[in-house]
Amino acid sequence: MRVAIFSDVHGNLTALEAVLTDIKKHTPDLTFFAGDLCLFGPRPAACVDLIRQENIGALYGNKDEVLSNNPILSTFTEEAKQQRRQNIEDIVDWTQVQLNESQRAWLHSLPFQHRVSPTTDYRDDLFIVHANPQDVHQHIYPPEDIQKRIYGEIKQADNDPHLSHMLHDLACGTLAFGHVHVPNIRHWRSLVLANISSVSLAQDGDRRAKYGLFTWNDGNWHIEHQFVEYDMDQELALLAERQPPNWESISRRLETALPS
Image (cartoon, rainbow, N blue to C red):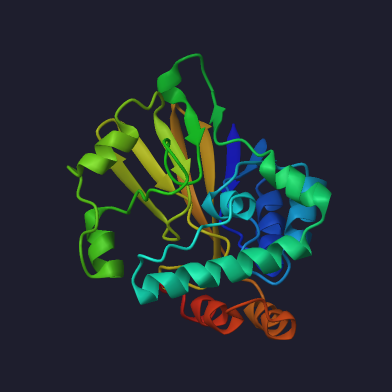
């Protein structure tokens, strides 16, 4: 059994098309999308249409959730956080206008999780979520050495109580997720934590689109991160043409491929 999983498209149709073309070369038995389809890119509606046309199973992510539950601005947040929330409000409003009723209804109908069972033993299961098994917001960070390299500090140690809270009762052997746009595999107790990274807005310094390929063989899931070149100049030109709110910042994030 072979399963292709991708996440965090963020309205980048150019990268999405390249990833789907690459996935088909591997002839997976199942292709699954792990959330955050529309927000930030210039062609959110086309991304929804393509996933639906290809009949790809999908979950919702935190940015899909916010499209149906706009964040409420608080008068008690500091100025920088207030501005960041306002930026999200603006791009949410713009994106909602791009989507028709059918596209919005489809997004709102997406489930939270999906389980792939190659055997009858739950310990062999591949469990797919957007961010973690509890919600679509909390981060599961990479192993500590990668955290130091990417962020300059350890944001989440192996003994972090929040990590234990998210994972302690998870009934599977391998967890696949996105949300943090850094490809990695982390081991926590008996669990394999496979971050399949992002199709768009990379945060690991590598501008290519990324996804994960999971192959069940010899009683284990063998995990390969796939890196896909795409025409970023085309996507940058579309951002400049359509100018969604804060498009210049989004363009810089695409070009630098670093944490925002």
